[in-house]
Every structure is written in C-alpha cells, then in structure tokens.
Length: 32
Image (tube, rainbow, N blue to C red; front, side, top):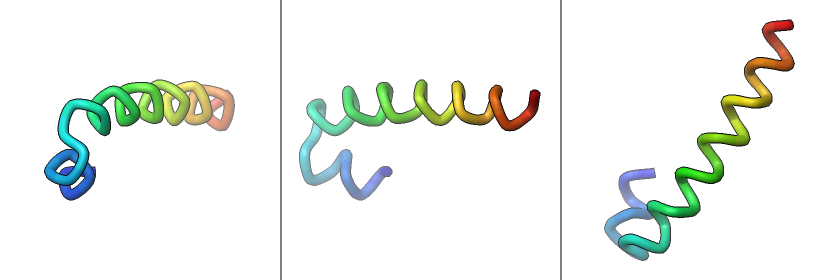
C-alpha cells in the first residue's frame, strides 16, 4: 500500500481507506 501512496498520492489514500473498510467488513463476516 505504501508503494501505491508514493505513486498516486492522495488518490490512492482514499482508495486504501475504502479498501481497508471492505477488508474489515470481510473479516467480520469470516470471524462470525
């Protein structure tokens, strides 16, 4: 993720936030 941040900057940060949120939701479903 850090590599992408260097390339795209803020744009990638926003994408990472959305991706991280999705991953968290997936982890919750798997945990349950």
